[in-house]
Image (tube, rainbow, N blue to C red; front, side):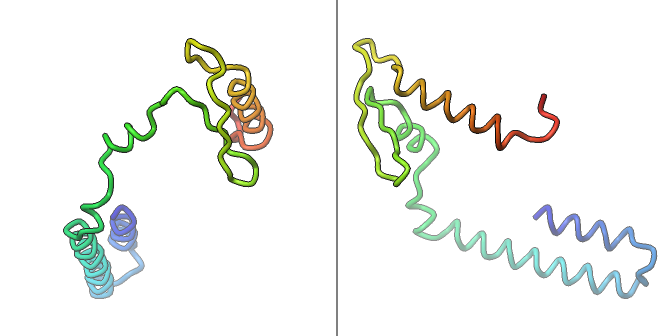
Length: 114
């Protein structure tokens, strides 16, 4: 919806567009926005939306269950088990985090991020 508001602002503040043309463009933008809203409302009322998990259900899924699972480069999950009896992350998981952080800092870090 923000895209439509930006378009409206651009049209409304453009002094080179005649008033009649502005009105026509604004009506087009309004019609598109109403269509998007109509589709969104239809989706929210659908059974597909109702079947989606809630935020609480998602959090419960993400909670740690005491076992560590590592995804390999092929996408398969490999259970690396519990590293120590007090259920704290062990060396294998720690090294994965360190490697991921190094990769980010070397390749993906935003410009000007220190």
